[in-house]
Image 1: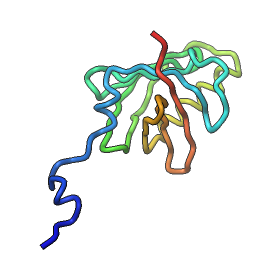
Image 2: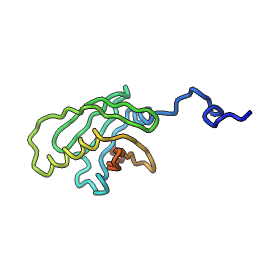
Image 3: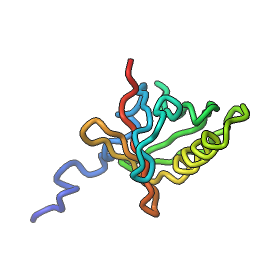
Image 4: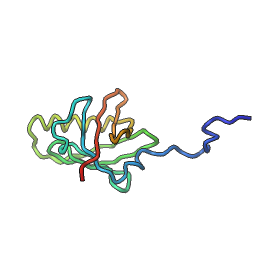
Length: 131
C-alpha cells in the first residue's frame, strides 16, 4: 500500500517555521508594495534571539512587539511605537510600515530578500541590514 507523501516524509513532523530561520536577524526595508523605500535605515525589523519578539525603526519612531510563525505563515501582534513627532512624509511611511506588518500573513526568503505578504497581496520586502 502506498502512503501519502506527507506520511512518507515523516507524519507528525511539522514543517520548518520561517521564524526559526529569522531568529537573531536584522533587516531594512527595500520596497513597499513595489515602491522603493527612500531611506531604508528608517524602516527596519529585527527578530530577537528568543524568536517571539521583533523590534525596529518605523520612520522616526521605534516599535517592539510579538511575533509568531507556523511554516511560512506569520503573525505580528500589536506593535507599540515611541511617540516622537515626525515630519508628515515620515509619519505616513511609519503608518504604512506598521499597517503592513500587522497585516502580514506569509513570509518568504528568496535571493537574500525577506518578503511579507498580506492576504490581500500587499507586500513589504526587506534585505539584510548592513553590519
